[in-house]
Length: 492
Ligand code: GDP
Image (cartoon, rainbow, N blue to C red; front, side, top):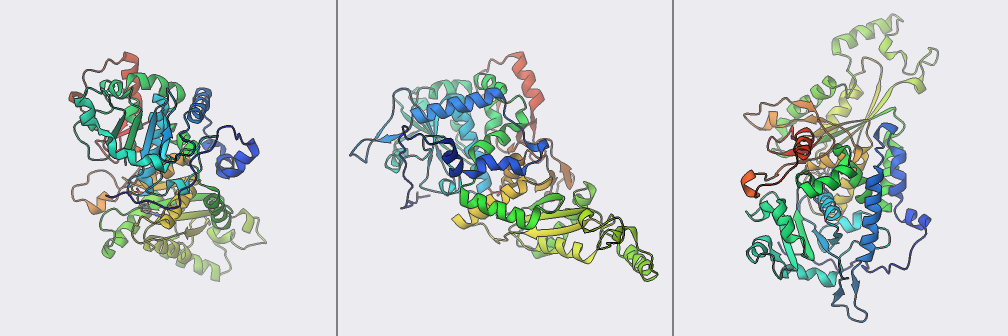
């Protein structure tokens, strides 16, 4: 697909000597410091000292390798000696895929000491996310971006034995050439080690593969003593919403969610048959069964019990379940009533409506008050900036939940669970959409880290990897098949 030029590109050069004061840095991206106020102590997950040092060192390197335009010549850029780059090319998939790929590119950039820059000509990430690196921009000067067309493919670079190659374009999407499938082999990594520019095109979460390369594993396992938190800690550093989006996230949270004692996120993603109205009741039923089974939502009063309670009420005998609601004379009161706010996110409004109506029409067995909310229902995916803002807003709101239910195979859900460091209840709609699905309709996630759907791990692809026993043992313990994709890999 042709690259689209966005005319109003942000200024890409920021002289390093204009060091900003810490308060102005904070004001430029309020979500960086404020995000922690919205997560309970169990979900803070502070970074290890070694990771903090690595990020500090990385940021310094990024600033030293800032791409500056030649004075008076806006067609050439200077590359400082010793500097190498990963250029993130934004794909055409949804926001979830883009963020998984971005975080993977960053993890790769960190372990290979390359500065991460993004080609802002397509997609919206540059308009959604804060600049992550203090004192230097991550935006690739547009004057340079056309160089991508001169980059070699990995296949060509390999054919030339990596001689005289300065720029290589890697395709790490769900379909890959034979050559690209060897990218995570130690030998290929050695080959690309001297190449200045790596153009990174992907829609996948490749971090689990990085842990399988011995040199990278040594670094990564020291930075991340708990590998199930890699995505959580990197996203909270790298994928922060800009101030105008952060303000909206806070407004929605304060207006609709924060006053309830418990916040529940429910992400309903219909990949197949999304427009098939006849399936809506089945999807709703599956959502309810799973939510009740896993104690995500409180039990409803069954109609027959409801009748009995109404009779009791007529006799002046208040049912226990209703006592707390509006009964100022009892020990319970409005303020002590247990309350749950459910945020439903979906492209489709039906799931929200059905759930809201259910809790409006029926009471709950334990008297919990349930409010149900939806912020958008876009109907279909499009590539607009406005939709991306809604998606980012909702992903962040879901990540603040106390309990989260996501949809299997959805990268949108992966980002929300990863950002929140939450092990979700996973809804498996394949039991409705696929004929021979044998897995259960819902299950508890084994990790908050996203699943890599297409790892392309075939022993034949890499020449024999010399792996220590310690490393092999680590892999067996911490890298598992995904629950929602048997061929996938997940850090646990
Ligand atoms: P995936 O397709 O489920 O893996 O998730 P992606 O994020 O990659 O792509 C889906 C895109 O559809 C998102 O980026 C949004 O633009 C849109 N979308 C899907 N579900 C939702 C939702 O619950 N809320 C909003 N606001 N957008 C959604």
